[in-house]
Image 1 (cartoon, one colour):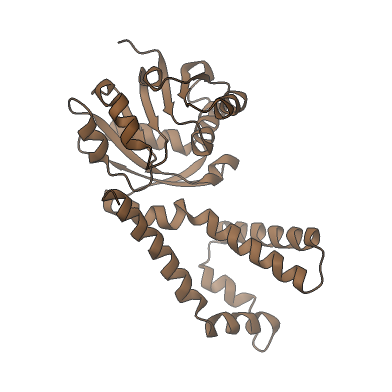
Image 2 (tube, one colour):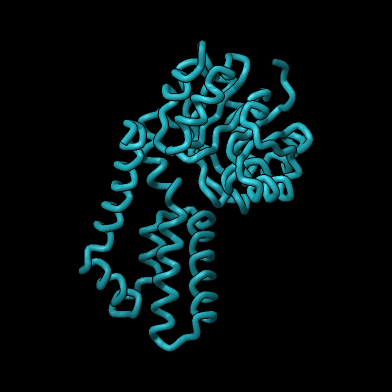
Length: 271
């Protein structure tokens, strides 16, 4: 079976769309050299409209690529591997962005040694501001890792970690955007309860979080120091921070993120 694409995707959801769009916009791969497979017609239509890539409903078509990105839900992976596992071979670089799934699961589905790189990107890649981590499987080379880094660097900052650390990456940055969105929901609700319109509360919340995030990146100072600079003794900010500390908010946040890591490990064990 010959190669028909430089880059293929099995699964055409939000993350696959973000990766593909970044790759096309950066000029790393032409849209005409990309193919994505998904059983859902609406997702295929959206992916094609957004990226310009070719679409198919047949997973096997995407396996005829030099680089194949597996971007399906963890619960769907066993069925996908049963279908396409026999088609995976050493000439394909397989990049998996599936939460909790060790490289060995994909390697075991192939008839022979295959090159697998695991990655954990996050949804801010959709706006070119993602964070991602990568690690290599048993047969992946330095060149394979570099190729994966280049793929994600089109719309994310990329770190290399060992595979055990991928559980922590999943919990911290993979799931992390949802934590910020949860905070934004809560801050907006507080604004409404204090008499602001929902629209005004949302604008103030969203711009505050955006600006603070930009300061974290550009100021070059630890978060604790930046917090200290806006926390005047006896002032309003100190009142809020003291309330949070009294309610053990920091401890609850740490516990929540560790719960996400625990779930990632459970997924790796098939639970």
